[in-house]
Image (cartoon, rainbow, N blue to C red; front, side, top):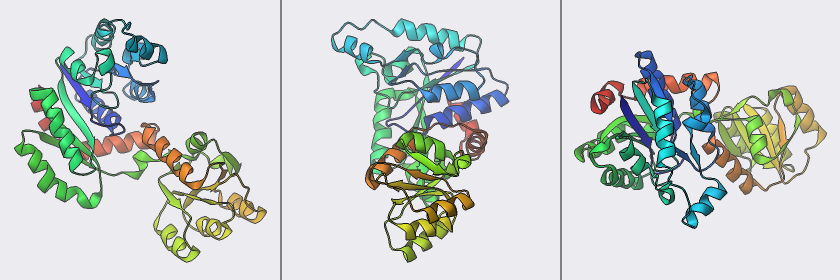
Length: 344
């Protein structure tokens, strides 16, 4: 059986997308695939999504056997935490019995779980797993993190996926960064561009994250928000920007009626009005006719942006359109043949 640990040096790097892409691809190749996320810092929605998408029969308690609760944290602090290697090993055996490949999902980063003796580094060693790193590319610090991972994992590190790369930077990454890493003995199996659909959020999920109130067009709360626009500029500049940005949520104050009207004339999924104030009846009527929900939130604009960006970062793949897009991107940008040669 092939064991593959999919990890990262930072949270929200896109590990779940790669696990799903790998799992689905392996299944089309006739391989029986098992999945386990040995450790999570909280209840893990990604593990639930992957269980469903890969049609795994094992219970979620085996797929994600150790969660860092407050009680477990306090036990670890006091030196009273039970040795949990056996728990993880038992879950691994259950989730991978009779399988051809075991996909092992890392926590937020590969050092998470160190206080319990179950960091990603130790888990990869425990299962003699080949390591695939998935990194959200930012700048030179991402390269530093990848090279540090090589120091930790040694020959077990088979390569890396670079994620969230702006489309205009793909060629640069191929010619420069990928070549640099290859010279350091690290293969780049894929360079994935930014994809708004995969990092979109429904109006309903945004409402939950912001604790907001939808006051009209409630039947449209399933629509996906792909971009965020802040309505703090003058209306002429706002209109130019709004026309270029589709499927967006516009975040602005209730007093900015001009911005709200401009947003309603363009491709807008939702108006998010900050400060807890209601818009006037004309705006509500136009939004209702246009099928654009208006959400009223109590936070200021900055806090609203921070909360919704956090919610988007934490979202995992769900919904038929997202899953199909993830599959398409994996097939297009991931060198599956080269990867399998390296891990077998």
